[in-house]
View 1 (tube, rainbow, N blue to C red):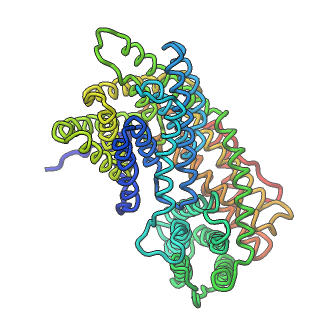
View 2: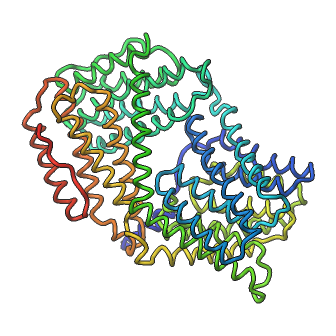
Length: 627
């Protein structure tokens, strides 16, 4: 007997999907050593309330503690922590000196600014979230200390976790200075991704491997960005890592050109990048590398890139360090320009308006309930706006998915805590529970419901340690009310341009592809290979960000998903255009002229892009004169 298959809605499929991978034991250790020990020291010293604030800072920093290099962690953890301390300071003094109406208006203004900033990227999103959450906590949590002390200890809690991130090893065995294991692993992953793409050339998985290569290059670029950890002793090692990353760029270009040509590649072509990956991770010499055949422009480019990489790895750094420095400067300028455009553009305005309305409305409802006699004890009114901030974040998943996950996770966490609170001794049992919850956060962040459950247990334990009564059922009520507010606001029809974030990302990808194409095909620009690689990276990175936004929008409920219709085909055309531009660059390096196949393909894709962008209302690049 055959049963009809039932299609799972995209938003529900997203809610049921979790990230996979090995347990990050180093992050688990940091989580165990962060909030719990800070709270224990505070309890033993008689400053429990400040310990609660420091533990909150460590908990929010732990949510941002993701795999990567230490230098990237400084920005990923430090910038949101500074924003959170600022929000706690503002919220503390506002809660003490203004009335409920003024506080609601202030929260609405903060939500507008923080929402616009959050549209810029992951770090900015974390900063905006911590700013608003900490502002709500500062305004509502009854603490005896002045606002400046609360902000200082919040920052200290986050700083303690960051210090653990910088000081503790992240792997059991590491070649050389373990402080650079994140960078080495990221650069090594780039060479592995190049090898995987070469192995997939001519097969059905080539496109997916090219996307994986882009992700690896993005991750390595982020891992190498940020401040130097040891300016003098580590300068040689850092320059070498930058040069090894720079040496991967021409290899990635040649591999992409081979994938575009869709011709068979000798099996030994992937062996060289594999050996380079091992050399990066182990800090060793590469030894002799197997040379691929030189029967075509892309294979000759691959062979030349391997020879250059071998020289960089075994004898010196060549111009790689200078090239990467130039890349970092160009990337920084490009990021600032893009950040300003995103924050003030349609995507930033749309997200800012929705965050402002959700945060302000939640604060107003919470204030009303707080002063309503019929509602009973509502001392934790700040939970409602703080919960709404997390729910309105689009980078946590589609709206319906994150609402379902938040509700389910809160109910599970509250029920678990209610049972544990009845059994555990106070306060020592609750302090242990905080430490265990902190250790579970790095694993739980793989799914929003699991993360919510663990954070719920941790927050309820902190509240109880601070001297307030058990609040599991109140926590469930606040979360369900916040879910209703965010669902309502998320489906209002006239808050900014719907699909603004997707369109803003796609416009940026169109412009980056345009700049890359114009550079490759423009007169007198093909000799600037370093500049070309920078533009290529910007084009592929912008495409990856647009793709992520499109995939997220497609998983929304139909009322929201329809606003992004047609953007996926524009992105697919752009990807083919950038791949073809890369193949043109390799061809021009080898022969100085394009074949009819290259020019015909460029013209075809530009015509296709022009047609599809009209339907989506997006700009498209114009055909350069060189074609």
